[in-house]
Image (cartoon, rainbow over all chains, first blue to last red; front, side, top):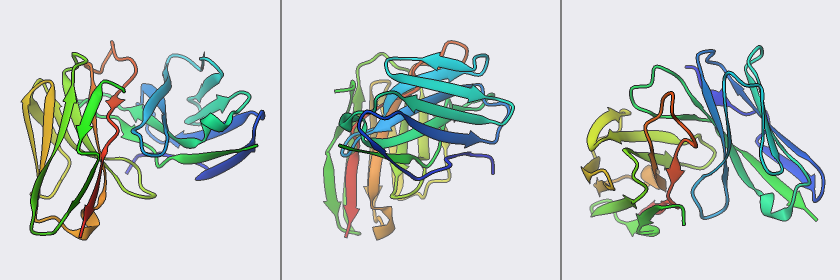
Length: 114
Length: 116
């Protein structure tokens, strides 16, 4: 079935470098996307979201890019810090959505080395 | 704290036990969810409640029984579980999704369940 997926299960970067985490989705009707960060022992936490009528959105040190042509979503983290080490999930909302339920990807583990 | 509180944080139970997981939110959200998180798998939606009414049961075995007495509380009753049910069980809440949606879900920290 249609689902959200990730290109790389693990990513290792050096502290201070920029990180890029990718996500592919297959449902062209998806209208809202979210990136979550999950640290060990915690639930997923919201990082940044983007609607399908946008192609870029910036937050503090994070940028989300949406390419609807190729159904691709990416999360860019600038000047990656050790505290950024976590699993990152993308999620999509597919209308009509009677259950208000988001569809999650498998996750990418980001490891930041000093 | 995210505003969504789950108890207990850890639970070990035998296959013949009955136990319950609790989730509580005071964010004024209308929808609450149970998700199962297993190693190397995407988050699996189990149940959705909207204004205390169950709107989705994602083909979950009957040994998992949800209860939503009000918009702030959600329970997951467990009985005769199997070892493969061992996982992290996450509760989440959200405002109504749709044209006004923002920030998706707020998750709790989860209950780490081990079935022995």
